[in-house]
Length: 468
Image (cartoon, rainbow, N blue to C red; front, side):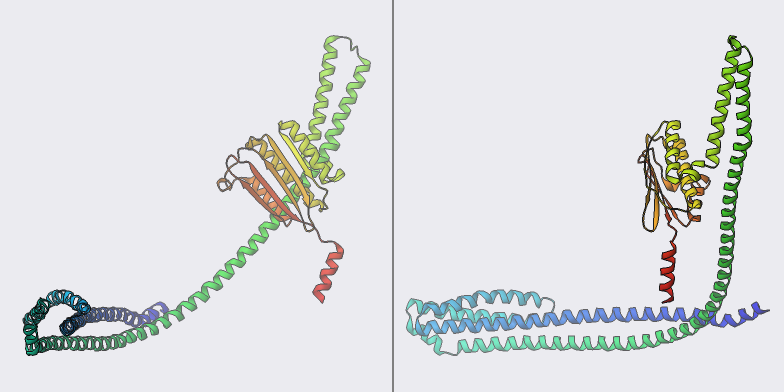
């Protein structure tokens, strides 16, 4: 029933959300269309403005060149000084260039082209009139050039040139004004379109916000429920992890206790039996004829067998519960362990052992770690040399076992590798940290860091600092 009510309540909101999306898309499409139209019209207007400005500038340059040429020509005619011909020559040289540029700009406009043809014709006439006056002046025909100068032909030509240039400039100004009006229209269209689209977008956004807030409130409630469930599950996981850790520590302790019990039983019971058997063999030697070769060989073999059994018993007892650790300390126990391993495995073992003060449980952890590491090296590493080091620091003890074997990729270690997992659990149970570093062909390094126990003075000083 609740599910049906929720469904009925959420259906209109879902429809509104579904409507807001097409509205937003439509607004975006309209805005894009308006922007594209305005951009194209503005681009055309800008091109028209640029063309008008260029035409205006070229017409002004042409007029200025003609004025400069006329000024230089009149200066030479009146003074006969050749320096006046320099601006004349420069101006005449630029006139044709200006005419060519204007002809290119007016190609697409027949009316402008007609006006330009008149301007070009008047310009040619004016240039011809000036060139004729200069030629007569150079030839010394004073009356002829003075007559031309006194007439109004040159003035009429310049007036005609000015009229045509002003007409072209006026047309250019009209095009500039049209371009400005077109840009203003495009801007106004863009403003209207943007305002309309903004209104539509705000409406769609408002509808979306309303529905989003409703969805967020539901999501928040669901998230709170999920967080409470996650916290409950995390609490269960922590409790189970703590329980499993305590169980593993208990099993480890029971295992060591069973090892110690078995070691004591082997030492007391089996040791007594083997010792009694060896004493009985010694008594038999004194009571039977040991000169017979067969009997002497049997007795010698029996004595060697008993000695081997006693040695095996001692080795098994040391593996189960190293007596050297409890009697001689960690340093001596590790020296004995590494020396016997080197003899048994045929591998060179170097040691760098410093005396450290660790609790008995931590000392046993270090011993078992080194023992397990040496066992793994003998099985898999194919090493020629091993270095075992124990160094003490003010706050911790560092233990390291390094070999020069074939190495491996630690990422490929299978979860079923109980040896490494057991070492890691032992070290972490003692409050330490175990790391393994290796690369194929570069040996392996097993390192452990175990914290040192706080002394009573340190504990008192920390307590005093905490109270303060």
